[in-house]
Image 1 (spheres, one colour):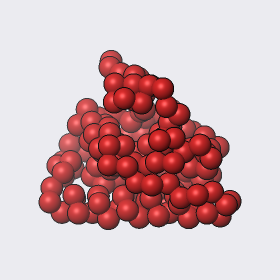
Image 2: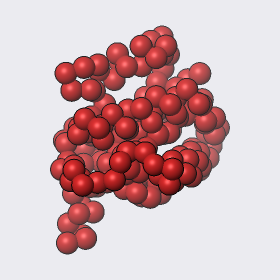
Image 3: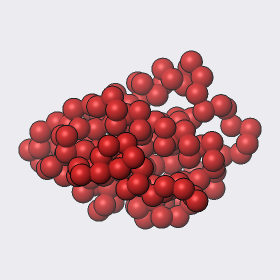
Image 4: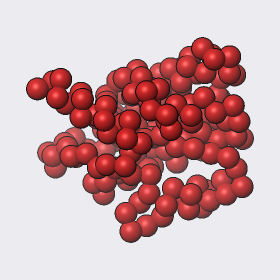
Length: 163
């Protein structure tokens, strides 16, 4: 059973977040509690370190954590949990580009990776590095800033920007 679950997640991550996986039951814990906030901060720091390690392997400079991008990422992760969806675009609402433009990133180069199902950031980054689109965001030479957010903590949103 574990092998099947891991395979399903890997396919969803590699598919570039197109398919919507089954979501946790309504009995799942609330999006944010004091304990989950601490876990989220630790996980976000680890996610940035892991992504910067991948960049270092190919001679790229590290990304600097950005509070504003992290807030945007966390808000999107929490919204996906609250509204029970898994997508860069908000169903019946804003597209990813519209979300970023509303946040002041209209004229900037930016990208977003999302993931569902992995509690451990190292598995999430490993999955992203196996996906052409996700890997391209991680290794984009133009990006200088990174924001990471999560909810429950197995929804991950990472936003990259050139400034």
